[in-house]
Length: 510
Ligand code: GAP
Image 1 (cartoon, protein in one colour):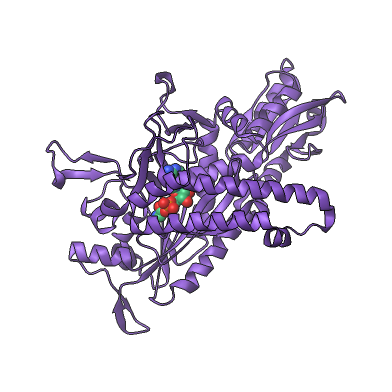
Image 2 (cartoon, protein in one colour; image 1 turned 90 degrees about the horizontal axis):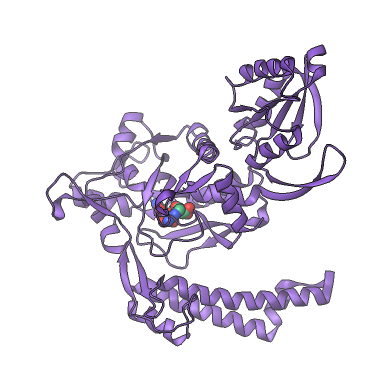
């Protein structure tokens, strides 16, 4: 389903609404509706269970959003958490300079892809894409241009060279995507942190930031947690919570928001062992995504071209969103940067005594960081389909169906009496619903024809629909319909809870 339809489906079926919509919304801020908040909670549960519950050596915390302002000086966010910003003087539109340049490279890649697709059509099964890209002169030339542009971009970003970025935009003749104008301002740095005041006295001392990442709440609590839980290195601290960034360009729905949620885990290791753990977490996190049924072809690793100020290695797990492969999760080797910085600015030791080595050291850190909202968008993109299916009367109709993994589905089972105006049926259905609702989020629905009720459940991703019909009254059996296969089987009322429970259990994927 295309991206526009995904956005309208999300609103129509109670997954996501624009924030404060009655006032025309607030740019890049969204609210989760009844089914959206269930799906988001289930994503968080899956993450928490797999990280905290399944690892003896990972514990969870819930730190405050506000932190002492020195935290952000120490972490480097006050000085280095900037994006390069450029305005177009004619359209008055604002852009991230690095994204404009990346967009230029993506356009060349699209041209290569066009040639590849044409050649594939011509050569059929014998086509070897790798060989074609390596030998076709036009592809080689275009690839060389992409490599040069990205190399120059990475170098300018590394040096914080705003003039260099401006020159690149001009040299490449990059135009405003909206207006086609080339009338650009100088490129300048823009700090992404939101700030506010503590109490009613204004000034630097009382300036508070809304955290731009949850990780720092973990770093400053490193020793508290280690001592109170007697963890030995290697061990991890996990956290789920809100983060805030004043993004220059926020688009693509919930992909880039100004208020979002992160699920982060910092894994503390011996210095020198960080690359081993970096590889371990890369592999473990990819498996986490695959376990939900996301095809391997839609996930890939992408090494960072520009390392953040704290990292000595960093990779993204990218997902093939409706607008192309983009970052879904980051795995970063953050060295001892954060703990050392906090140690220096606070004057408090943040060291670990390693009983096996009989020495004190500042641990190194490998971080896994995934945006909850991006994971939500990935799951919606992956599972929302439009399908032609047979109707009850033998004809065909189109349905919107959300083929979410059953453990993530907002509503696990719907209970539907075959007819609304037969009290024996509605009474039996209510009894079944009352039994099931203590175990799962269920829905009772008696309005409209049964086919329409199935469609409503398909659209919100309910994996099972239980129908109460006249046979139920005779022999205490019901039909249970599978959302994906449309198969209906008849089982005893007493078996429904076990049947559904087994299918939606997180242990199937943990
Ligand atoms: N602690 C490391 C860190 O914050 P990041 O790559 O800046 O690293 C981690 O962010 C993840 O947070 C990203 O992979 C993405 O899923 C999510 N994320 C970052 N900025 C976001 C935004 N503006 N809107 C939604 N999700 C965002």
